[in-house]
Length: 373
Ligand code: BGC
Image 1 (tube, helix red, strand yellow):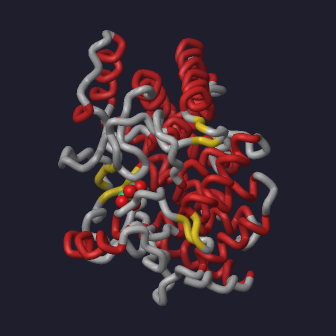
Image 2 (cartoon, helix red, strand yellow):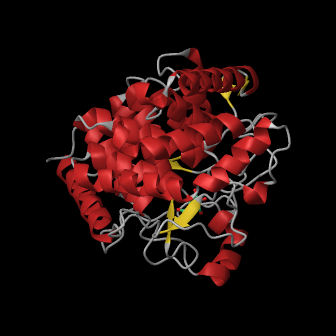
C-alpha cells in the first residue's frame, strides 16, 4: 500500500481537536475514561494503561480538569482495593506470593469495582503508568500530588512487592514472561513518586531501591544486540518499547540504546509509517496501530528527529474515519490476514473509536506544537 499523503498542518490540528472533544464527551462522570464506547469486548471498562495515557494527553492538550478527574478516579479505585493490596504485600514479604488471579485487575468498571471475569487481568504496567502520568500532570499544572496520597502509597507498596513477577504484557499476552515495556512503565512510575516527602523516608527508600533494581534488570536482561527486546529471553522487539524513550523517558533519547531500539523498530514493525505491535501479531490479522505510530513519533521527536515524528503523525491522521474517530488498528497492511475473520466473528469489527488512539494523536500533535488552546 502506498503511504497516505501527508496531511496539511491545519488538518493535523483539526484531527487532534476532534479527538480531544470525543474524549471529553465520553469521559464518565466518575472520571473514568472508557476504552471504547462501542466495541463489544471493551464496553463498560476503563483500563489503567489506556486511561493513564489518555489523561496524560488531555493534560498536555490543555484539559486539566478532565485529567484531574481521571487521577481522582484512580486514587479512589486503589483505595477500594486497600485490603487486597495489604494481603498481596504481606504474602510477598513472607515469601509466599499470592497466585496471579488474586492480583489487581488491569481494567475496572466505571464505579471503580474490579471484576474477576477471566479477562487477562494480571498486568502491572498500568500501575506504574498512572503514577507517572499523575505526577507529570501535577507538575505541568502546578497541582499538589498529595490529593492522591493514599492511592499513590498503595500503588507504591504493590509495585515494590511485585514488580519482578511475570505478568501479561501491554497486549494482554504471554503471562509467563517479564516484559521490558512493563518494567519501563513501572520504573517511570516509581521514579515519579520517589521525591514525594509525604511518602515518608522508609517507603521512599523502598521505592528508590525498587526503581534502581528495575532499571538494572532492563539494562542487564532486556537488551540484545544493543536494542531493547520484548521480554527477558526474547530477541524480538515490540512497538511499545518506543514509550520507554518517550514519553516515559526511562531510556535517554540520546543514548546508543535509544538509537538502536528506534532503528530496530523501524526495521521490524513499521511499514509506510504504519506501526504493527510486533512481528508475530495475529490479533484482527495483525494490523497497524495509529497510537503506536504516535508513540514512535514521540520517541523520534525526543531524539531530535521532528521530521520523522511529523511523518508518523501524518500517517496516523490518514487513518481517521469519516465520523472523525481514530480506530485501534487499520487493515491496510495485515501480518496474518487469515486470522482476521475469526476475530470479526467473535467480537465484530475491531475497536473504533479507541480513545487511546485519539489520545496519542493529541499527545504527539501537542508536542509538535500543532494544538491550540
Ligand atoms: C489491547 C490493550 C488495551 C485494551 C483496551 C486490548 O486489545 O491489547 O493494550 O489496553 O485492548 O484498549
